[in-house]
Length: 114
Image (cartoon, rainbow, N blue to C red):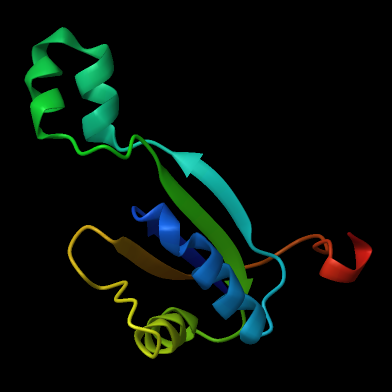
């Protein structure tokens, strides 16, 4: 089993990614609001205040976490979204990580239970 971790900097693609996960049979995704280290430092540490000038308008990113039995799920999401002209590999759009899991405990809530 693998952990799929997507750091999405372009929030407008969130629904598209979640739709891709459903299309791939993945229903246990979790989304979390996140803030980049650069933005956090600029806001909280005076010595880094100059970074504020370099920051864009989006204050947060979305982190999407899910498990998958397929280590190529990230590549499949990229391929599916390219079919609708969304390039997750473009600079500043997202980062996708796939990590091998030693064990997974518990059973996720399914969409039918919601």
